[in-house]
Image 1 (cartoon, rainbow, N blue to C red):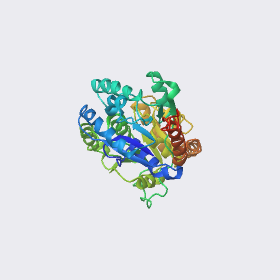
Image 2: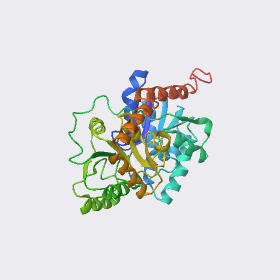
Image 3: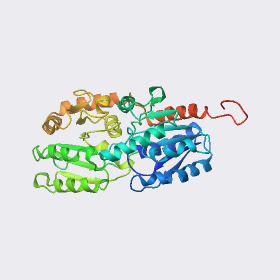
Length: 362
């Protein structure tokens, strides 16, 4: 039995939350159960005050292992050393200490709290090799680090095909990501605007309200005459609908500046789509420039524009990259294989619990 401590609604449709939902759904296949305990959402650092209540909820579940989601770890970190139950703890990290979407003071303060939490964890499960490298560089103990990447398969069955996504243009380009600054939507929109009008119809999938301030800039840019009729905003959609959009698109692009894993890149590649993006975060670990996609220098909008132009104008290149992407994706685990890795690690952690009969381990 795993008690997974997260922040807010576990049903949220974003990367880390979707990862945990998949693990919870697959848990019975590995003779396991995942139960969520949520830290209430409130302005930072107020959720820290909820730490004792959260740990009380965990104790009531009587788990074999506690799994800390990195988005919530710092809020319970100060209370973990004094917890009354002796259940061993592991952490699942989708971001480095301090998070990735905050301002400097918040990041520095949260990093202290996160590190405090990770001192109580006997396993630190990183969502990617790139993130594991960052964690080692940040001083987290390498002997406790393991990489458990997300699965490549989007959904068991997509919804019905969404129809022709090109809408009269040469290429249907899909981008999946919430509207936050690090996803690079403004750069991607600028690159699309520099292409001929008949080149690309861009489809945006993701929560447009994740960061209202940034979203205002995105909406203002979408209203520009140079993008009129060239961008379709889908908003948040189901996993099955995302799978259908992957299947109907010609290529995938995400101009993210910092992506600890980039689940959507792996999903797109598994669907046979060439990927276009910045050489940042985990993308260089997933796709090689000119082999499975086109990877350009971070922040170089001209290079991003050029990459999209090549994808549009050279159908043979697009097909070659897409085929290579699909083959490369087979080296990434499926969600079931990810679950096998995760629950294997958690069983090892649970085995370190003190034996109630007096032995050292059970």
